[in-house]
Image (cartoon, rainbow, N blue to C red; front, side, top):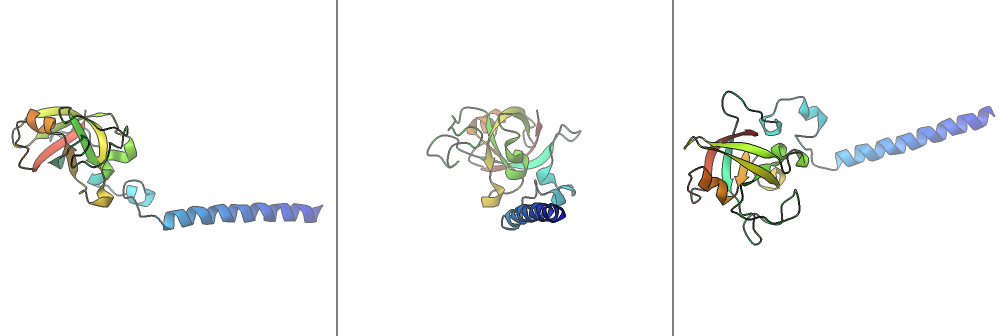
Length: 165
């Protein structure tokens, strides 16, 4: 009986070791995500913050123009719902850290132009993937957002602040 108990404990330990090795291997073979990896979350990183309304008007960012319609420069359908959207809608794609793994999908954010002082609300529908070329401080918006802020879409990049609405 004692021998059977020892074998059972050994079998459980072997299974636990295999599970642990699988977890370690998965974490080792993927690129670290600065906004999800717990070691990095201990550091305050503006790219991973959850911007709230602040006395300064929000988190500084660079706003760029994105096409959300099929065939435009925005690429494929949006990450939040797998659909294309009209450029006449108030839409935004956020850098990976701010997109927060989709936690901001279909949530409104407040965007303020530092040039015109105008503020609009837009809906998050997509991610601007920071692991594939998008900078970490991008608020990538539809043409409708640019027009509502009184900005020329031909400029391409402007400073803004943003926060959760």
